[in-house]
Amino acid sequence: MRALLVVNPKATATTPRMRDVLTHALSSEVKLDVVETQARGHATSLAREAVTDGLDVVVALGGDGTVNEVVNGLLADGPGSGLPALAVVPGGNANVFARALDMPAAPVDATSQLLDALREGRRRTVGLGQVDERWFTFCAGLGLDAEVVRRVERKRADGRKATPALYVRQGFTQFLLHSRRSRPAITVHADGREPEQIGLALVCNSDPWTYLGPRPVRPCPQARFELGLDLFGLRSLGTVTTLRHLRQILSTRPKPRGRAVLSLHDTDGFRLTSERPMALQVDGDDLGDRTEVVFRAVPHALDVVV
Image (cartoon, rainbow, N blue to C red; front, side, top):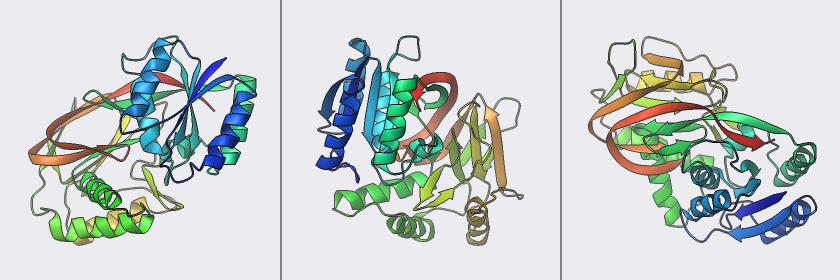
C-alpha cells in the first residue's frame, strides 16, 4: 500500500516530534512519502498528484483547513472509483471533521486508531457538500459567521492564536458593531418552497457545525454524512432573538426552534442570493464576497480510513 502524508507545519499540534512519531508509525504499515506544505493551496496540489500517481491513501496531518485542501485535491475531477482514500490525524484547533468521524482528539491516539484501521482495511464512505466548485467537509456559511471567520483570519495574520476566546470576541464585535441587521439580506431558493428571506445562513454536512473549545456548536443536530445538506437560518438578527437561538445551538440537547428559525434538513441543495456582497466561508476558510451561491449535496463522495 502506498500513502502520502501531507503535513501542515504551522498547525497547532504539528510539532517535529509529532511528525516523526507519525512517520515512523505509518512507515511500518505502508510505503510512505512525507511532504510539508509550503503555502496555501499546496495540500490541494499534493493531493491531485496523489490521484495521478495512483496512491492508495492520503493522510492529512493538520487542521480542518488542511483537510479541506486535501479533499479538494482528491476530488478535483469529481468522485470516482480508484481515488485514494482520505485519512486524518487532527493537528489543528477545532478538528471538526475528525471529531465528526469519532476520531480521538489527541494526535497520538488518532494515529493508533488510524494504524488499526489500515491493518483491518476499515473504511467509511461519506457524502460531502459543494458550494459552486468548492468542496466542504462539514460546514459553510454566508454572512455573519463568514465575516467572523474573516476577522479571525486577519488577527491570525497579525500573529494572534486562533483560540475560542478570539472567535467569541470577534463574533460579538462583528455582530454588535459591524453587521447590518435591520433587514434580512439573504434569500433562500429551494425546490418546492417559496423564497424566504433570512439574515444568517449556516449550511451543515455533519453535526456539529464547529466547536468553541470543548463545547460543540450544533445548529443542525440532524445533519449526517449519509444524508443531504441541512440549513439553519435566522429570519431576524435582533439581539435578543440571536442570543436566544445561540443558547439553543450551544445546548447539550440542541433543538433550534421558533418563528425566527428557518430549518432545512436532508436537501439535495439550494441557492442563496444576497442583496449586497456578503462573506462566504467553507470549513472555516474565507472565500471572499458573493451575491449568489449554489449549494449541492454529493452522496458517496469519498472513502475515509477510520
